[in-house]
Structure formats: C-alpha cells, structure tokens
Length: 113
Length: 113
Image 1 (spheres, rainbow over the protein chains, first blue to last red):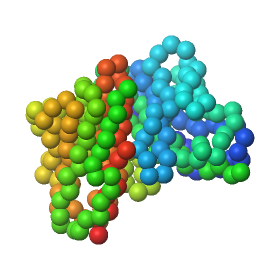
Image 2: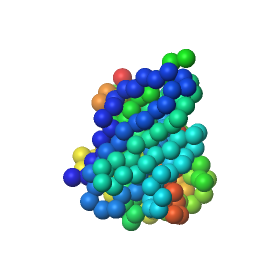
Image 3: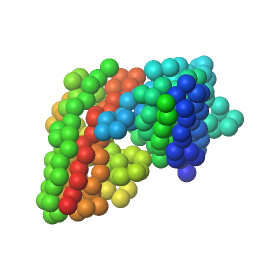
C-alpha cells in the first residue's frame, strides 16, 4: 500500500537550533517527493521537491532534504531554526505520471525563543 | 509559477445547507484537484476536477455530496451539499502545471453548526 509516515506529530526546538523532520514512504513506483509548509490559517507552500538526480535537495527558507532510497526516507533539515519557521510541515509522495499526492499526517513545529 | 485563489476564505454554515467554493488559477493548469483537511488531520484527496466532464472521485466521496465543476482550464468549483458538522474542514484546491509543478490555494475554512 502507498503511504507516507511522519513519525513525529509535534516537535519543539529552540530558536537557532538545528532541525530534522522525518518522513518515510511506501510507494510502488519511482517516487516524486515533496515537503510543504502550512502556517496557521494559510494554505500549503512548497518548500522543496525531489524528482531525480542529486539526492540532496535545496529548498526555500534555508531548508534542505535528502532522499535515501535504501531507507525509503526523505527527511527535511534546517541548520538553524527561526521563530517564523513555526508551522505544520507535510511530506507528500507521488509518481511521475500520476496526479495524486499522498500526504503524511504532518509534523507541528514549535519554536521557542 | 501559478497563483491560486479561493472564495470564500472561510464560512460558517447551518446544518443541511450547501456551500459552493470557487477556485481560480491565474494561468492554465493541466489538472485541478480538491482536498479536504479535517481538524488535526492531513490532506485527503476528494476528487480530480476534469474539464468539461464529470469529476473523478476518490473512494469515500460521491458526486451527490461533493458536486464539482470545471468549465475551463483555470476555474473549478466544489459544492459541499447537505452539510453536517462532520463536514467542518479546510477545503483546498490544487493545480498541477507543466513539469509537474504543484500549486495549492489558500484553502476555505468551513464550520458547520
């Protein structure tokens, strides 16, 4: 079955600390992977995506993610978190020739000053 | 990149009534989709809005409850019919453009009393 798992429902970090949000997927075809951020009351904003090539992907707002096929993972990282990064983060997977995205349940990030 | 707008941004409705949500894209997209995000949950695909023909619904969603129209390449509507409190959710429109670019609308926050 196709699925996306985000094991951490809620993460709290101090401003300036490093961050890693986990994402594992189960997908039968070559996966296209996405990370989205949703701020309170807002829609989803694409942070980054992986289709092919370099497995370390750079995104907006200083985020990066690394695709590890052997571990079926696509973890999101940021070396130094800012208070404005507090939001809900969603990992999603799809296939090249399909339109459907499967979303994880999200990780809520809280940032303390 | 495309910009997607939704109307209304939020609404409070009475049980048994219907609400139509509009999704407008500022450029042509190949595909449009409607998602539901129930409180504290991830996004669930309701249906694919097909231009000029009936939408393609996911398991658990039916046309009588969620009629969808897509008269052209930049506009779609989703109606939530005969609403109940369980329909209280955020409803999001998503567009897919050339090169598998993904765009989300800001969402419509619906509360059913």
